[in-house]
Image 1 (cartoon, rainbow, N blue to C red):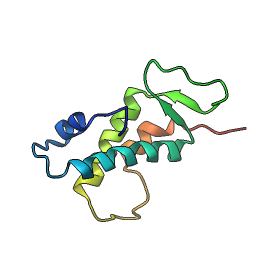
Image 2: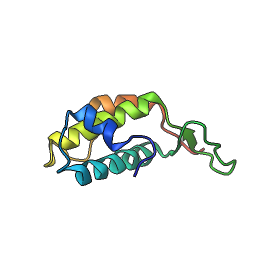
Image 3: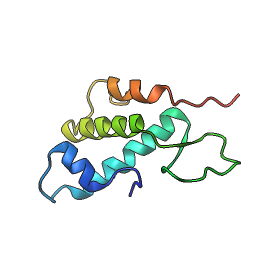
Length: 105
């Protein structure tokens, strides 16, 4: 499970008050942060963590990353089939996350 968002936080954001889809929602949480790391070439760490010196692309999770994850999870939850290109991030999520992209030079 993601250490960045809890099941309860996401269910509150989705306005879900039942337990039947908890496994699905947990999967979406993990997938959202995996998507962030793949999209930005970053390795996320929780607030207060010490990023190892050898992890050049490490960063502490921010509110904009959390908000982007909420939006992506909500999008996936409401649109269970692929939409449009299917691989693109929702515009708001992409906007929140693009500033965190790390390019190894």
